[in-house]
Length: 64
Image (cartoon, rainbow, N blue to C red; front, side, top):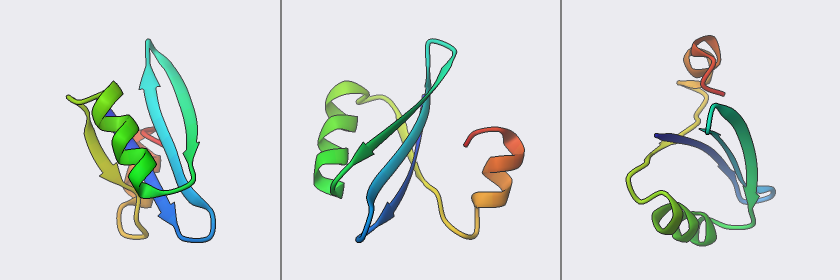
């Protein structure tokens, strides 16, 4: 499982992932909350940060 996230100090952490064949969007106010949730709920998931460099590729793949 892959969890894609984008962090901004002004807006927090925007999260996108697929669960049971459905796209899920989530939000966390800070990275600490996000990491705690991700490691507790989906300890096996790979966390992938969305950056300017990989945004286009992830969008083309339909990951985000």
